[in-house]
Image (cartoon, rainbow over all chains, first blue to last red):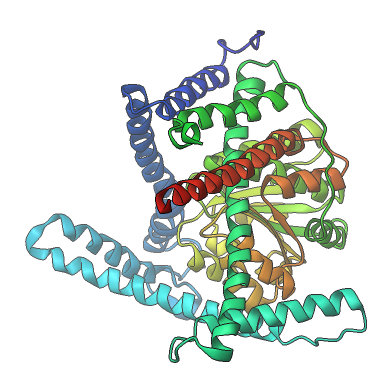
Amino acid sequence: MSFHPAALNTAYGVGIWVGALLTFCVFSFLYKDNPFYKFAEHLFVGVSAGYYIILNFWTVIYPNLMEPLGKAFAGKGAGEQAGMFAAQLGDYRGWLLIPAFLGLLLFTRLFGRIGWLSRWPLAVLVGIYAGLQTTGFAQGDLVAQIGASLQPLWTGKLGSSLNAIVFTIGLVTSLLFFFFSREHKGALGAASRIGIMFLMVGFGAGYGYTVMSRVSLLIGRFQFLLEDWLGIVR
Amino acid sequence: MTFLEKLDRRWIFLAVGLLVLLPLLFPLALPLFVTPPVAAFVKAVDSIPDGSKVLMSCDYDPASIPEMVPMTRTALRHLLDKRCKLVITVLWTGGPGLVDRVVRQIIEKEYPDRKYGVDFVNLGYKAGDEAVMLAMGQGIVNTFPRDYQGNDTRSMPIMNGVRDYSSFPMLVNISAGYPGTKEWVQQVQARFHLPMVAGVTAVSAPEYYPYLQSHQLLGLLGGMAGAAEYEKARNEKGSATRGMDAQSLAHYFVALCILLGNLVQWTKSRRTVA
């Protein structure tokens, strides 16, 4: 076993050791729940919360709200005459007071009597994201996917034609499986049973990919231990 | 079969652990082939004009390092070999530090002539998910007035001439989930018609194959296997390639467990009927 020469001399090296020990703490859960695992779990929650608060302050609240608002109050940035609500001069920064106010309203949840005020910014958020996702889905998924599904069954090449036929059968029968307004008997029953087979193939592929993803995480941890921590594999 | 019925699952954990560990110590060099989605990814990136400014969004956090970082490294090398200038964003809270480290490791070691702010910039994280994507369509610099280091992006040479998505020939997205490839397709590819390729985690890959079939994605890397194939296509031997032996053995073992599990259930049901 050979250790990195600088492993204990640098902050990076200390980080590697802390990472390795925490990895073992988490792995210990595979045997059974224990205090080492609990320690790693709680440490992760605490560090994450602190990290997210600081990151969001310095990358979102400061550059996108406080700094432009501060400059707008001071009349700096967009021209000599620019300042608060100087939209006619192309300076819209003063309007940031509105999202700032809505953001502050979210904290009224902490004060019982006026807690209902937090519903206003939540309503704005829900409305905006519902709108964004609806139009995004309509443009990116619904129309585009329907368009891509309408493909010729005979393309002039046997392989791609077979592919298109299988695709179309799979699409139609899978859709028929989700048609619940009539009992699945006769032709509809047969089609929906074929649809189930296609769905099962899809679930199987999804399961295989999930296994690959989870095994990748284990491989990543072992690579970290063998390469970065122990340095025995390069 | 009664032995298997009562088998403690920790033996399975141990077997998976050994099957993953041993090939990492003693590689088997199992064969690997470049599949069409990965070949399409390579072809799409190759088609970007040399020296272009490329938008690269790395939407992941440390939980996805084994799958995302290898494909990020290879994509960075691919683009830097074409002398592309990289405008990098991160829409995951836990990602900016990790992505910054990966980018700097590659550039400082392998492309020391590339300068920060001139040849590449890490705009860092911005909260808002889809709202950020749409805001970038109105103006990249307005959305990211400061980079990850806190520098003013307006004064950076690389941001000269960068207005919105029309300033880029392609979006390279490496994504581990939400917000990620699906949202980039829905909010940006569909609205702004920006050509796009994606590298995604294996668990989310099946969701994106329809986008590949509809040409909304020009290429797709699925999980560690996709990253390893990308490395092979680029004649690299990175951590994804090194992990594929372990990946294959673990998959064989899981398949064996599924067969044995079904066999156990079948014999059990026969005993119950008898």
